[in-house]
Image 1 (cartoon, rainbow, N blue to C red):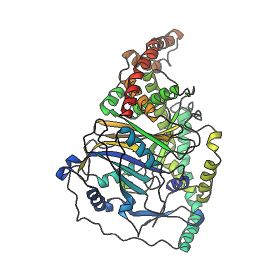
Image 2 (image 1 turned 90 degrees about the vertical axis):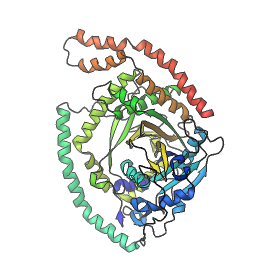
Image 3 (image 1 turned 60 degrees about the horizontal axis):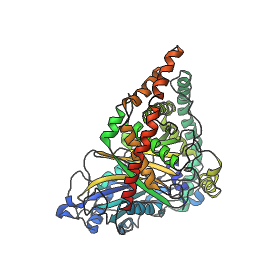
Image 4 (image 1 turned 30 degrees about the vertical axis):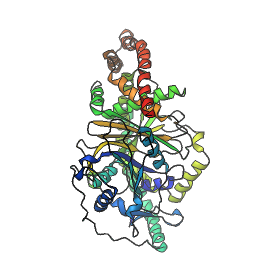
Length: 527
């Protein structure tokens, strides 16, 4: 029996019918690589059963303390039923990309039974009319509760059921299993009392760890290494109200080589900076279409893993976060990339100064009963509509393997992600890289984003604008950084003139290009 951390337990308390707190993935597989050239559902059942001992999350369930006086516990489920967790469905006709997006959204909108192990594998057949996929492909839509895993431990869970070559299913491998009896109420109450006695000591220890980080942050702000200029509330948008129980999902797959080529145009930029810039550009275009773009930049929350090498198999979440402005107020794509890079560097410096792990430790001291009550009242009273958000969207990046993966012998041809949304934060962008591709997949509220194909097209347009940006646009970002130390006004004015020159064609050209990708997105949706 193992107790959840405060951070893991918070996802249990936040779980409501409108805000199910699971994350997941959408993998598409080509069964022609499997022995015999096909994969049956019973092959998948046998394959998953043979791997149940590879990840602890598969057979563990929650036991809640009476009245939520303390955080819940994990125990090994004595009544585990594999066929409850692995399910089989097919797309309705015509079985195209739009039908898959609708099916993924419906599966993701459905909450999980918190009394059972918190994962589901949905095998989806009937994908033959999706452009670019081999005939006979199937999808694996996976759901795992956020209380059980974070993005990086999700990679470990994925590794448990995948191979790096198309090996045949081992039907003889049935790991031995013995469940646990649920603890008595008296035992859990005794553990609760012991935790309450030791909590002041643990809090004092965490507070002592915070003091050096806080002092370091003050020194770095005073020395100019860290700026607090951008530390403000995010603007209110159509994405930041109370969410409904309905979801939309879509994905844009980009070539990783193109993203890296964009990265190389700005000194010190990273792939993550480029992806955040693409998301910022996509949001700018989409919100402009809806006449809902605020004048201030939207802000993304980007989770940061603090999982050490020895904690790869640990259950739950070991993450902190940083806030990055997305530059949605900037029209020129290369200027936006330079802005996002600068914001990301500053945010990382702030997080490192305080200590990402230290910030995570404070979640241990959230009162469990009050946390659950507060989450329910926040949702029921619609408080998210009454204040500005801390951030507008989430952008979580999960690096995947460069080598092919196989599931029950079937080769993975595409990997995408899903994630939770909640009141005040109605969009999550999950970034998955696999092989030569990187996918930006988003989950949102159907009432906030009624036309998800338009946002998917806007992401593709934002990428193409960055890829096709002219050298003049690139040059405009570099002199801006050099202009600050220039003492003379005349010298400082030149970068402004250089930056202003390409703005005229920049307004016209994206508008002309925008119609084509949007048209392609619509035509794909109709197929």
